[in-house]
Length: 72
Image 1 (cartoon, helix red, strand yellow):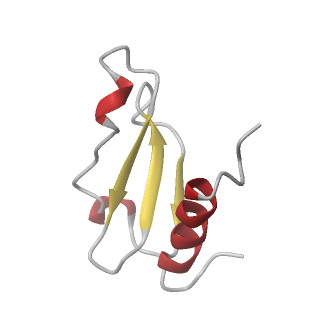
Image 2 (image 1 turned 180 degrees about the horizontal axis):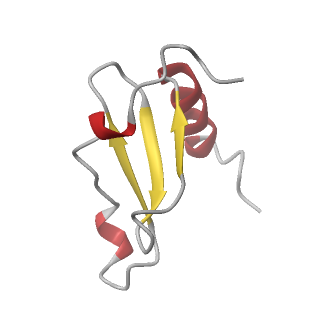
Image 3 (image 1 turned 60 degrees about the horizontal axis):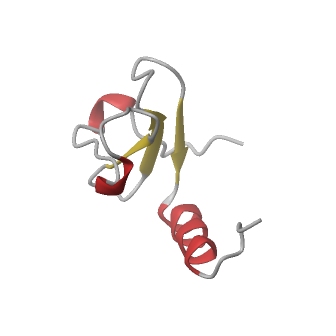
Protein backbone atom coordinates (compact mmCIF):
# COMPACT_ATOMS: atom_id res chain seq x y z
CA UNK A 1 0.00 0.00 0.00
CA UNK A 2 1.46 3.34 -1.03
CA UNK A 3 1.75 6.07 1.56
CA UNK A 4 0.01 9.35 0.73
CA UNK A 5 3.16 11.13 1.93
CA UNK A 6 5.42 9.36 -0.56
CA UNK A 7 7.76 11.95 -2.10
CA UNK A 8 8.26 12.55 -5.80
CA UNK A 9 11.30 10.81 -7.26
CA UNK A 10 12.74 14.20 -8.27
CA UNK A 11 13.36 15.01 -4.58
CA UNK A 12 16.09 12.34 -4.48
CA UNK A 13 19.13 14.15 -5.83
CA UNK A 14 22.16 12.85 -3.92
CA UNK A 15 22.58 9.25 -5.12
CA UNK A 16 25.55 7.23 -3.85
CA UNK A 17 26.83 3.68 -3.75
CA UNK A 18 29.19 1.84 -1.45
CA UNK A 19 32.85 2.63 -2.08
CA UNK A 20 33.64 -1.08 -1.85
CA UNK A 21 31.55 -1.75 -4.97
CA UNK A 22 34.34 -0.54 -7.26
CA UNK A 23 33.90 0.71 -10.79
CA UNK A 24 32.29 -2.32 -12.43
CA UNK A 25 28.85 -0.78 -12.00
CA UNK A 26 27.23 -3.90 -10.54
CA UNK A 27 25.74 -2.27 -7.49
CA UNK A 28 22.76 -0.41 -6.14
CA UNK A 29 22.60 3.31 -5.45
CA UNK A 30 20.84 4.86 -2.49
CA UNK A 31 19.49 8.36 -1.91
CA UNK A 32 17.66 9.93 1.02
CA UNK A 33 15.37 12.92 0.66
CA UNK A 34 14.83 15.64 3.29
CA UNK A 35 11.70 13.96 4.69
CA UNK A 36 13.71 10.84 5.51
CA UNK A 37 12.49 8.52 2.75
CA UNK A 38 15.17 6.33 1.13
CA UNK A 39 15.23 5.31 -2.52
CA UNK A 40 17.21 2.41 -4.02
CA UNK A 41 17.97 1.82 -7.70
CA UNK A 42 20.19 -0.31 -9.91
CA UNK A 43 23.38 1.59 -10.73
CA UNK A 44 23.43 0.08 -14.24
CA UNK A 45 19.84 1.16 -14.99
CA UNK A 46 19.40 4.61 -13.49
CA UNK A 47 16.22 5.24 -15.48
CA UNK A 48 14.73 1.93 -14.34
CA UNK A 49 12.53 1.11 -11.37
CA UNK A 50 13.19 2.63 -7.96
CA UNK A 51 12.24 1.15 -4.60
CA UNK A 52 11.20 3.67 -1.92
CA UNK A 53 11.22 3.08 1.81
CA UNK A 54 9.87 5.06 4.74
CA UNK A 55 12.38 5.98 7.44
CA UNK A 56 11.02 3.17 9.65
CA UNK A 57 11.24 0.57 6.86
CA UNK A 58 14.79 1.58 5.93
CA UNK A 59 15.90 1.54 9.56
CA UNK A 60 14.49 -1.97 10.01
CA UNK A 61 16.30 -3.16 6.86
CA UNK A 62 19.65 -1.67 7.92
CA UNK A 63 19.27 -3.11 11.41
CA UNK A 64 18.56 -6.56 9.99
CA UNK A 65 21.52 -6.34 7.60
CA UNK A 66 23.87 -5.36 10.42
CA UNK A 67 22.64 -8.28 12.52
CA UNK A 68 23.19 -10.73 9.66
CA UNK A 69 19.50 -11.57 9.19
CA UNK A 70 19.95 -11.78 5.41
CA UNK A 71 23.15 -13.83 5.41
CA UNK A 72 22.92 -17.16 3.62
